[in-house]
Amino acid sequence: MVKLVVDSACDLEEAEAKERGITLLPLLIRFGDEEFEDGVTLSHRQFFEKLIETAELPKTSQINEYRFEEAFSSLTADGSDVVCITISSKLSGTHSSAVKAAKKFAGKVHVVDSLNACIGERILVDYAERLIKEGLPAAEIAIKLEESKGKIHLLAVLDTLQYLRKGGRISSVTAIAGEMLSIKPVITVVKGEAKLIGKAMGSKKGNNLLNRLVEECGGIDFTMPYTLGYSGLSDEFLLKYLRDSEHLYKDHTDHVPYYLIGSAIGTHVGPGAIAVAFFSK
Image 1: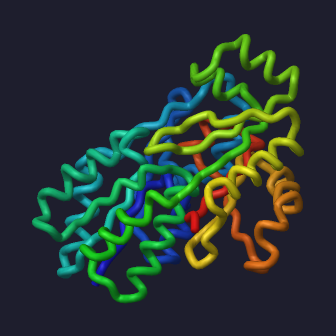
Image 2 (image 1 turned 45 degrees about the vertical axis):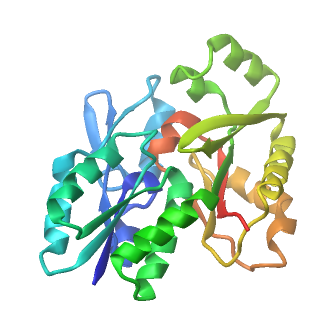
């Protein structure tokens, strides 16, 4: 039997993970003196309620080696093998913790660096779940994940520059000027790191730029997992994007899944962001 372990940076919450038979290890998130387990003791909606109310950015903490070792020990006790998918090693020390813990289980645990986060990591988890259901052994699943993860594209349009400023990623002057001009930055993940790849004035142009970038990536492989994501307390911007991007989906599917983004990325993009994740053709 093959069991799947993921960290909460893939934006799964505890209830969904349990329903799917996935072991979810949460990153820790602190608002001042309060500490929560991402997606477990603090839901994604509760996270954004707190984020909007606070002036200071929350702090996230990686999952330590002991937490992974504890999970791996429990899951392999019945002879099962484990596939573990983590947030990009370029964004968190969580992957390193998982690798160190896995070394104690003599080939029973296979750790895959998603080189992604958020819904980009999530669709790799979805693919792993598919391969497990097909009955593939853990080692072969890990190989297929390594081979396919380079085809994953995560693209996002941000509604505000405020949280990039708070995190020290852009200057206050740039943020204020951007807000005045209604500039919507577009970010992606390149080789495991977040990169700014475009700017658009206004949400309509931001959505159009996002669609153009999807097409420039080679288009969506609809035989593989794909999804959309949004941040904040309303899916209004995402539903508008779905209308603006109907031509990308209408001939391929009658259902486009979407989810609320969690704290790992939500801390830095703030509310009002929309994102798309897919495997390119």
